[in-house]
Amino acid sequence: MEIILYDCHWSEPKNVVLPTLPKKKIKSLSLKTIGLILLFVSFISLVFLASPYLIKELAYRLEPKATVDSNEDFKILLAQKDEQERLKREETAKEAKKFGVSTDFSIVIPKIGAASKVVPNVDAADENAYRNSLKEGVGHAIGTGFPGSKDTIYLFAHSTDSPLHISEYNAVFYLLKDMEVDDEVIIFYTGKEFIYKVIDKFITTADDTKWLSENDGEERLVLQTCWPLGTSQKRLLVIAKPV
Image 1 (cartoon, one colour):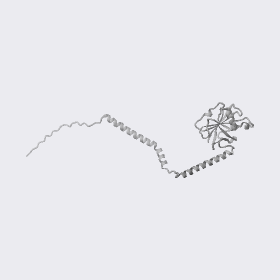
Image 2: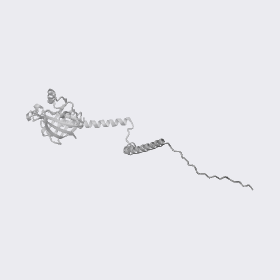
Image 3: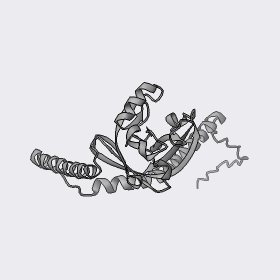
Image 4: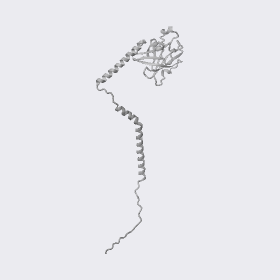
């Protein structure tokens, strides 16, 4: 009989040291994680903010649209537009003819019966120039705007102290003093009709020229004549805005 003896020896377990990451590497990973999170949040925010525009853009792209299938169709559309413009100009010309003015550049104030040609680009600082222009009609101050220009349009004309002198001095603005808020002023210019309504009327000094250059970004019509009637002591101004 064979007997085998084993030497069993028990010993204390040794401490096991697990591998660790360097602190710099841990910090780098943390910064990358934070950066990715911030980038994701930014992307989500951008999508959220832009979603209304994206929806509108998508709706516009998907909406069925009328298309011009050929050059012939395009020519037809242009012809129709030209015809509409022609009819509108004819209607404007008829309207101007009722007042005895042209559609080149004219002013009509129905309330006071004023209707006159407007002489463009008159130097209001040159006495000879503006006196000669006022023999033809109403003067338009050089450097100021024209109807539809979104600027100040400055027009001026004579007044007189007597109805007997209206014709003699071509006193188109003789009754400008009777204008009130909401009264209508019609300007015909380059074949088009522009309608304005009075918003203010006041008297100012003869040297008050700010109205020639003042501009608040909105179209404004300024009508000027002398005050008291027949003198040059002060200025009567009527301010109107486009309808």
